[in-house]
Image 1 (cartoon, helix red, strand yellow):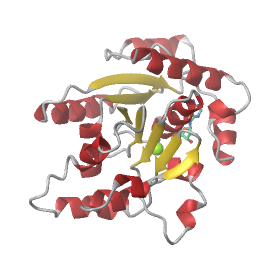
Image 2 (cartoon, protein in one colour):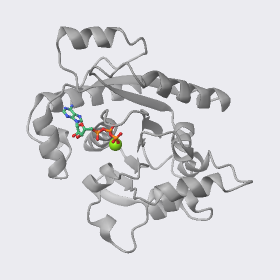
Image 3 (tube, rainbow, N blue to C red):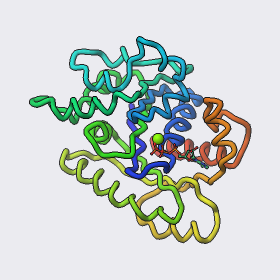
Length: 251
Ligand SMILES: Nc1ncnc2c1ncn2[C@@H]1O[C@H](COP(=O)(O)OP(=O)(O)OP(=O)(O)O)[C@@H](O)[C@H]1O
Ligand SMILES: [Mg+2]
């Protein structure tokens, strides 16, 4: 199982849109995928588990991370063939506080240790992160084989990504990990200004860039769908190319 996190400390850069399309897209291709929503905004969860979230018995990622005895499988919800999900909710804010107060427990590797239990059951685990660094995000970084940093190309694009990178590197180095970090440029207008912004960012990046195209993205999210499952559009074809790149990388 390969674990990939979508992380940028900046909000609204396309982490969730990329996570849900990546997870659903890989599962459409027959890969066994586990999607984990670790963001209390629960945007990915509301796309795939809108009804389940309303149930009294709903169990979320925050329960998993606070649960010292439980089994990770108890937190799975089935989304579609090949795609399982662990959802989020607002209580993730409390989970972070509880972790900080759990003295004597290795609170940074809880997710990694849980994922070890199911490593043969999935080909990919995709983790959608919140735009913050806290113990929950640390757990995602430490559990990951690869971290994809979506960068939204606009006039603020150059702010924020270095902080994200430095935080990832600090964690990766202090835990002696070999995590790969790669940028994905999102919401790109394919003009000269955007080309110059992209060229000024020196980090390793995916060749595919995801174009800015609001209509198909907005419509699909209103319908609790992912854009790659809707009718053809530029942004759909970009996400399909990106999926292909992710798959080729693993061969
Ligand atoms: N390629 C795109 N073209 C146009 N709009 C997009 C595109 N990708 C995402 N969006 C829109 O941009 C907004 C932010 O996207 P998304 O929720 O994926 O970002 P995020 O990084 O997960 O945000 P947050 O930090 O709040 O979790 C959403 O309204 C989404 O619909
Ligand atoms: Mg998000």
